[in-house]
Image (cartoon, rainbow, N blue to C red; front, side, top):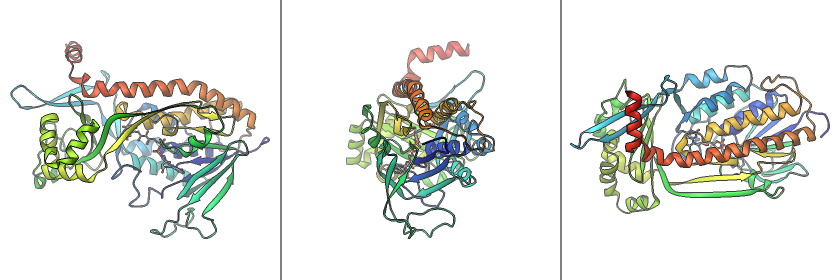
Length: 441
Ligand code: FAD
């Protein structure tokens, strides 16, 4: 590559890939996004591993990365559909068996994190891309190979028979696209999640240290319906219920237990997306005897079953997938100036710190700061004019990115693992409660 506009291939159109495409496009790059699945803005497409679109905790780390994507209303649009969560609500039972709710503020100054619908956030990012002339979205395209020296990548397209082709949007079913095809790129950004194909191919070009761990905890998704739908399910609201929410909408709810945890995050449709985290052995016991699901909840998460309803609790446990949690550390995250991995592809983490997506969005901001700096542009001031980048400058930028980002990624992975203890046990420990009383005093 001489002094010219880079051809940028982005693998994955999840939150991280979509934001990376905005950053690249705002620098005038020629951007092609390749996504394995269909367009999630089309009805019926849900993110892998989720039964519906889930809500996540969005923090300043992620918001800041969107804010730095350049002028526009991106952040305002995203924040408009979020719900502030000012703290945790710890659910339990007093010695007499009465249900208790204990609100623990995140910040004495009232700062908060936000509940955001993942699909909504992702859709807003994709909508932004539609407005940029130098980005093309290619759905149903699976990365199958990459040569980071010759700067070529290979894809398999999976025709989407179920939907008509949307005008102006590339579909793999397109008759002029072969089932397997090859592309050229100057730089490839692998944003294709925890089981990243980009990372797999990058490993053949660089001596990458790689550490992958499955923790002995599985997770399963549940839904608390809105308050007005509870009575027909034989369920009832909690004391902190507000508006049409079955319990407080402005908290991240936790039912801690000895070796397990149940959490609930509010959604803008007045429901809550909940997650059961428990050891694999507990899951296998409950899978074998579904009648034990409700008693298990009554014992370990008092009050939670009452917000969902007995029948729904059992049904959702049986119907929704029981999924593993993976933690990945690797280094370096790049090869020369031609390939780099971001988001879960580089550092999938357990979800207990609520920072997986936030850290992935931050990767994008940090990466482009290094790219801007290497191209002698001032960081954080993108323009719509093409900026010339050479391979050498990109290589310098990716090298600097790995150097600063790898230690941060490893640290946040460790913090996420440690926070499992904090969330399921620490929030009830005498030391924690003592500290809290002192703060209140
Ligand atoms: P992904 O969201 O995985 O997107 C990757 C994309 O790449 C997908 O669209 C996929 O289809 C595509 N793809 C995969 N392979 C290929 C291929 N070969 N070719 C082309 N495309 C491909 N994070 C938070 O910040 N806050 C939270 O509260 C939070 N809660 C969570 C709760 C749970 C239960 C879980 C499991 C995770 C949670 N996370 C949270 C983590 C968050 O979901 C991830 O960190 C985030 O989705 C990562 O985004 P990504 O774009 O890197 O990857």
